[in-house]
Length: 45
Length: 377
Image 1 (tube, each protein chain N blue to C red):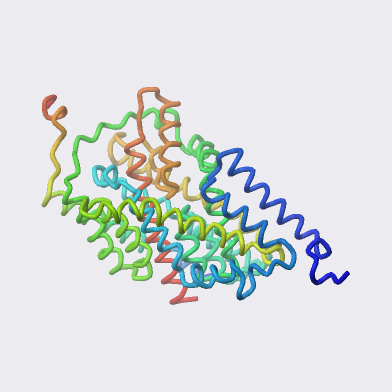
Image 2 (cartoon, rainbow over the protein chains, first blue to last red):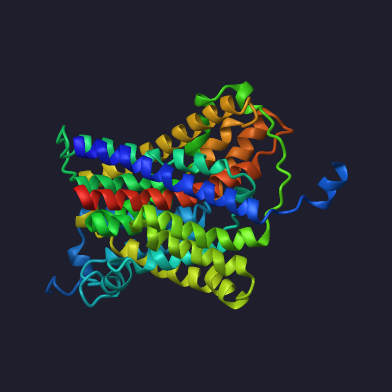
């Protein structure tokens, strides 16, 4: 049972860590290659 | 009249039950439009393989061959993932990066169910025989993703693959029934009414191209066992987003996905032979499948509530329920529940972001489970 608990905790930690890395990747790429606001949004602004 | 040549002389009650199950799946697929793309080949496979003396699951039989070539090698789920990746648009996720964490939170159903099944099995209560690997394979139903379920269970517990696959695909179709009661139970009306600010950002083409490449590398370095799944998913997506291989993209999205779906569905149905399927373990697998989906939904919603508080009520907790990987069904369910609470509240794009994040998260969680169980099991 201890092994199963360990797998559960570490498994969720790995999942969050990987998705955290994905978030970081998105943030970095987003900064390096920003998209543009749509023209209608730009006019409103 | 020698019984070994005549099918009708070898019918058992198990045969009748399995033919009925195959018939029910065909009914659901054809008449009720419940995941017909999958239930039709699965239902047909069940009927064919349970015809007495058909020999389809034997070594040289059609389903035996397809099982060896496509399931035991993990080939079919990986090829399907190329098609899935080609069908997914990650823009809603890329425009709303915070939804990534909702995808992660909603994978708790995998590990929570694994824990429960092991507790019932060899871990403590011993009410039914479930080893650590078998419990992990049952838990993976919580990925709400057919290819991931098939991939992981074919490695950890191939003897349970058929009921696990059928449970995963069936419950994905039942998301509109499973999720709404949980969503209403765990959120207040005031929370469900929250109107989220419109995301103004447009995602650059470079972002859409770099995302699948860098994600494969990033996830693969942390959870190497997830590389086949995340790699094929992202390869399909790259075919879509690169814009330079329209023929390959169209083939992945259509012909490849369709051909492998036919073969995979038939094979899964073909593996549901009466003496393997009609066991008490199978009933528990189907029960725990619902538990897995419910836990996924609940933890996604709870994380959504946390984000709601931390953001100063800018995030509607309902979108947490879309962190489950049942794409795009779950996003539509969230949209519907959001509109019920507030007719001016369109949550579809935010929910789609969480839903696509759930796709990545389920693959990652599946890889993590595989890695840890093989390492420690």
